[in-house]
Length: 282
Image 1 (cartoon, rainbow, N blue to C red):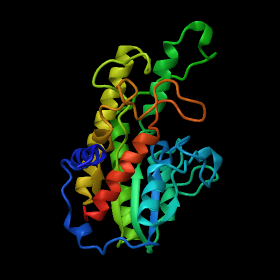
Image 2 (image 1 turned 90 degrees about the vertical axis):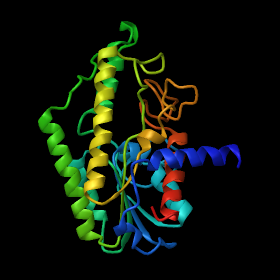
Image 3 (image 1 turned 45 degrees about the vertical axis):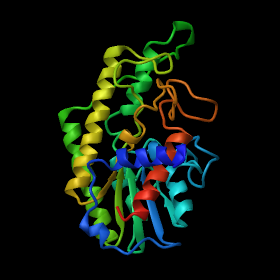
Image 4 (image 1 turned 180 degrees about the horizontal axis):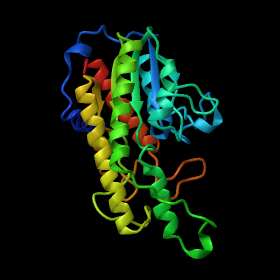
């Protein structure tokens, strides 16, 4: 087995841990070339700056090398990319300005649906930007830093309810579709920060707790709804901005890329693992 094959095998084991195959999806016909695939979610699915810009509203920041685009290419699926940077689960279920609800892309012909959402509901990226801005030197700091907005108990309860509604809507609109929840890539290390990921320890600790809680919530909803779960959080652990082989960007990013977001390596790993799971019927 080559080094790359060993890496993929390890990634598959990590990403599928705690996510057994479920009878409903196992009974569905295998995906075929040309099948309709709808991708929904926020920037961690849209992939802003990950490859050249994909078709769609400029503000959604879809990248040609995002994991949905790579999955569609690998399996010869017809991708309907409804992802949009900055969106919340409310924008999956309802309109966002001129944009229709992402869920409206799901129809009876859909055979695969992926969803990565919830991070903006709890202010995850906003809070990381706020933490980094607050620790910048005065001569390089913006005139006004964003304010951290920590989620309340009511916010978490409402988020979980909307995640269940998304699953129910997918089942109603596309009864023959596989539904896959893909949680968020890991950005924060197990403790503290580093030069590449700035912020006061207390702020980073709070965001770390939010990330862990969001991953647990996503896993719980997937299990209760009988959906598949791909734990990108486990798959990318050890490859954050503070690690030796970073797959994601920290408080700064190369031109064209977005800070505190997964980069090309993270999207490629997520796509390869998801393709392997779908090919294996799990």
